[in-house]
Length: 527
Figure 1 (tube, one colour):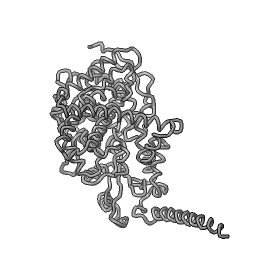
Figure 2 (cartoon, rainbow, N blue to C red):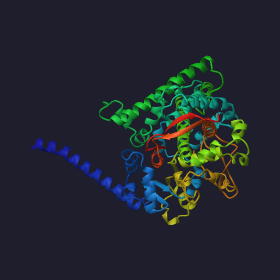
Figure 3 (cartoon, rainbow, N blue to C red):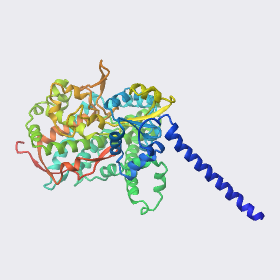
Figure 4 (cartoon, one colour):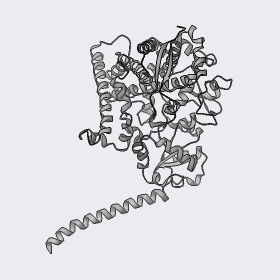
């Protein structure tokens, strides 16, 4: 009997623990459905109960959360609850309402943790840290810095053209653009070029790794413990995550190698010719700067720059090139443009807006950025519920407590809004060349808000308009890529159609589901 009781007591305690755990889970479900401060907002019940609703679409469905959000908005309306403490807005004006105050508020750490770059300007949670780091980096993204960078960009674009003309076989233009942009950013960051353009098929391992590692972001966001675990498991247990992890490790290994060399050059005062971003970061670190106070912060900033510097421009050039080549009318107009031939590229790039706006290159670049949606899922910020209700005009009765709510929206609700851009899925450069096109510039927000974005300034009616004098490095690269490529070579699409660019998966940056853009390249007869 005594032995039975000794065995029974532990079992009894386990049973009680399980019972209490079940009660706790049930209570949390009931609370989130009926008593939470956001319970009055429409949305799927599963999303209200658990953040793993989002995980299901991000990971198991493969970057399909944005598509699901669009479906939910069509079902529930312009404001939906997509998480226990998260709201999403489809109204395009909400984008500007959110970003008008977003820089003063903390970012959602649960979202940004997946980038593993909290020491960077992009990944900083505290707005004061982000602001000081952006200001620190402005020296490399100012107009003066971009003008000094022109010879580097010109040289890489010309090398791209030379490499494209070296083969009569179809070329993967997506990888070619990515190789060129990666060569530019690595040179600007470290003073040493990766030479990705020299790879016979533009398949430099780092180029492929940056692309292959993207799906790992959502895994890391939902399961922070997964990365350390999968790294020690046999590869056959999780082959696909292992491949993604291997890609992420190779990126970091390359980055650390370059940074180690840069640190030694700073310590021995043996800089390469000219100033580079990472030499500047290490130099400030050696002088005790508190903006990037540790080597980890330098690594985080370098990682953000490396990925952003290759992703955004390369992808946008690919989308823009396809639509240009897919439309004989647009292609012919760009080939026939003569204005750029008599102007120094980046000098013309910084002309007054009314002068630049007559260039078809300008219109095509604008349209490419609008259609590509560089960062489709806008970052989330924590807003007071009172702000949500006041700014969006919702009834005050919905405000149970003034606490922090995660609020987000998507740039696709701006760029693909038929009210702003009639027939938004059509590639029509002429819409940017009309007398009223200035009204469209205020709604072109491809890079959201940050050091790589087109600078914006408020106007009297409370809106935001584009200041075309202050472009970032990304815009300058697009200008030169389109200006050179379509004046110097003829491109013919091979085995690629509009269906290949119709849909994309959202892995913070878009990944199109179809076949990559392949072209046959020949020298222009007029050259």
